Length: 218
Image (cartoon, rainbow, N blue to C red; front, top):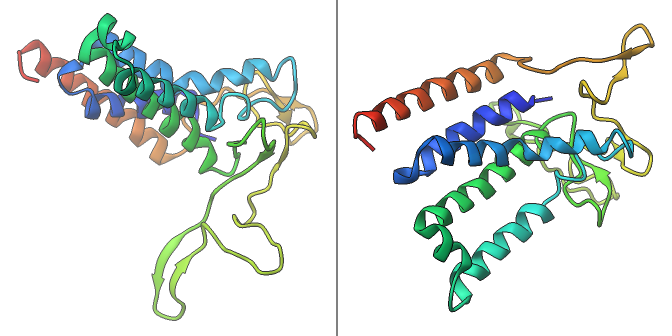
């Protein structure tokens, strides 16, 4: 499962790419905080097992946030966000929503550990995994989505469990059964090459952007 560190790194890359002239340490901190915020549901899972990757990993949280930003900035005579923070605040708010969705939710949804994107309306965990390739024997192979006429799952192998049956996505706070049948607490930092690439790329890109900003180059 991609760690909170990886989510923070990807959020940092989004900040570097999307903040434009609003790029500074405070704006990056807001965006990175939004990108890692969904992982706070691991704390809620200490009280109610099964809430990790569900309580804050659903589409309704960023959906409501986006709707409020849109309503406030487009349909109110006097926008609270624009009045208080100006155009800077509006851009940071939208980038923060993007960070909540992409590294915050999609990193887990597009992974074998899964997320419950429709909770609490629908409490099942889904994992959208597969491949897309061109094969000289099979032609186009696309397995992320496989519609079925016999009532099979739309996302192959995606149903991991539900909040109701206390499906556990393991973290250091929410240990799972280890190979020795005991509870194994693992602090996930970097577990694959692509995760290391994202973290290193984020550090380099943010470092370069901060240096350019200190030189007066946007």
